Length: 274
Image (cartoon, rainbow, N blue to C red; front, side, top):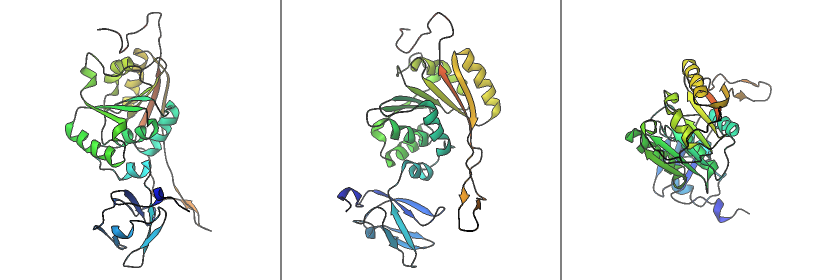
């Protein structure tokens, strides 16, 4: 028998799932109604039901009441910028070995999609320190992060870390750079990372990759890998399984590297005095 934690309560988020392309992520309130092409869904009817149950609309269609995952929050968040999709973020986390309890640095908060994903991994003792210069973008990201319940695991910083003489994070376990010119942040990112710690930069074009790789070598990073993640879904139906005509193709290139020491003289870190 399901416990109380499996029952839907007011002010919780629920994914109303009709099919793969028709689903709605909503915050349940007693008097609200969701009007859709398959009928009206009353929020009050969901309260007290178990996650996984289904509701019938006034048009005799039904939706399943699903507990949202980090993937659902990511795909349904408000976009202020191009987001990092789960097909990239999952590989990023695996390639960099992101774990619970780690300290992660993110340069370029954007809409907070990747911030939310990283926070969901490093919680409860780890933290994501994210930096951005656009107050409007950060306000949207803050709402998206809060919606997914990750606020307490994220430290937001409005500052241009590229121009800062000091850095507020030391001995970070990993770093992410999501800027149009990621190489400009490499010196400061290097100062915040532990030795051998991994980083990844998100690049829309191959020209950016070329310049970035040169700068990574100049800033003493090694284990450099550039890749692209392509996701193709399959329409699996008895007797007529085929590739989907819809899919997510190219969204970004990823460039991974790890902090190293090329010479005998140790480089400065965030803990070193100016």
